[in-house]
Amino acid sequence: MPCFSCGARQSDPIRGASPWKRGVRQEAQVLICPDCQRAHDLDLDTCSTCGSVALICRLGEVECRSCGAVRPARAGGQAAVSCAPGLADEVEAALNRVLGRVH
Ligand SMILES: [Zn+2]
Ligand SMILES: [Zn+2]
Image (tube, rainbow, N blue to C red):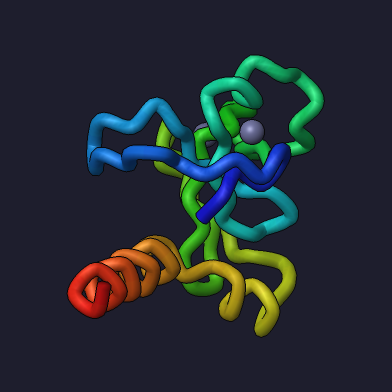
């Protein structure tokens, strides 16, 4: 999953130690590269309770990782499709494993 803003890809993703951040933009889970995290015009969704951008988008809801507030996603079916945290990563990792064996 590339950076939603500049399209950069993680060169060496390390789970749990990546400087990349997850966020939610227009109720879709996005990744933000370290460079773009310094920008202030990312237009990320914010928590309506505490204003944090540390949100995670799950099926049908958006949870704040700062204060724990959960709100339903507005966009119904579309959000359910676009918000599958981890799924895209898992698919990409699986593809990489398969491709790695082939080559
Ligand atoms: Zn970026
Ligand atoms: Zn919050």
